[in-house]
Image (cartoon, rainbow, N blue to C red; front, side, top):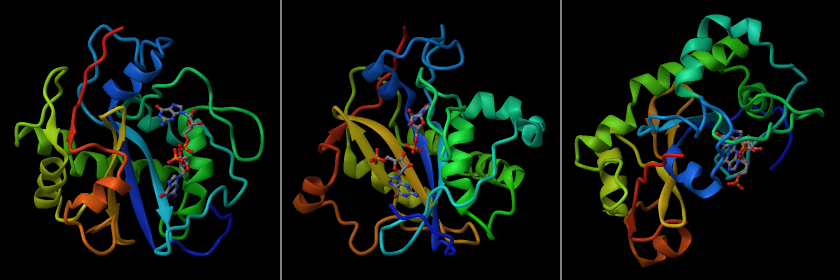
Length: 222
Ligand code: 5GP
Ligand code: 5GP
């Protein structure tokens, strides 16, 4: 992790699977987080991260405090699609604690200039990408659905996304369940591969991956 102002090479849209996070942490604190009567059975937003091609990334690039007033028109959608699934407030770049949205804006959003112009542009870009590429729908159309019993081949998850989205994602697992799905974009927000080089699912790629050969998409009810 490096702190810098050099323009990034690409963006990563990080989506999280609520069932996996909520099962691991039992974070039952907010009726807008894990603690709801109807479990979340779709991917929600974690953040949009600027990256460099060499594998490093910038963080906390300028001291631009998150101001919820600047995104007030987006708050209903942010609450719906970008809930915090943790109980504790995350640290902010320049001290103190704040909302999950504030953490993501300060750590990652401020490093997205000049592609992304300001806080409103950051959050509206994320919501646009999230609605344009509905990975929950893409996976469910291939029969890969929220379930507490079923396991799906990791290779099927990756190839289903690759075929519909047009580029290879990164899948992150925790205890054999999908925790995150990351989609990558060039600076004009066209799909691009997250992983450089081969995306053949071979033994070596399983050794590098946090996922086993068969993964689940669990649901969580408090
Ligand atoms: P972890 O170590 O859990 O993968 O990541 C911890 C934090 O490091 C993430 O929440 C994120 O802020 C940052 N991070 C991890 N991987 C990447 C990456 O590929 N790009 C960027 N921009 N940040 C990352
Ligand atoms: P990142 O991984 O983007 O650097 O940081 C995520 C931070 O936000 C962590 O400190 C974590 O405690 C906090 N956080 C709050 N809500 C969530 C959530 O729903 N998902 C994740 N991954 N982190 C969250």
